[in-house]
Length: 101
Image 1: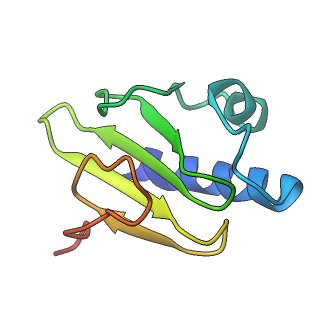
Image 2: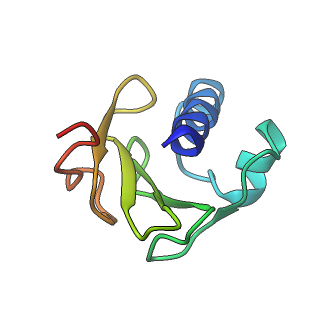
């Protein structure tokens, strides 16, 4: 979860600088912080953060723990607020079953 939180901060910085998530991918994310390994995989990868851009203001970040648990953060309206999920979503409206539930 910590890695996903850091990746969320990177995504927010990108959005605030560009006013869109379009163009946000592993290379752009690494320019802000290379402490995290990013990918664009359709399924979460253990130890990495998958970036899934969902239009101009939607984004899903997903990761998988070594135990196989999936965690996601979904930004629906730009970089201001993310919903937490325990599912491998590709649509920013589909995060569900939050981390603490």
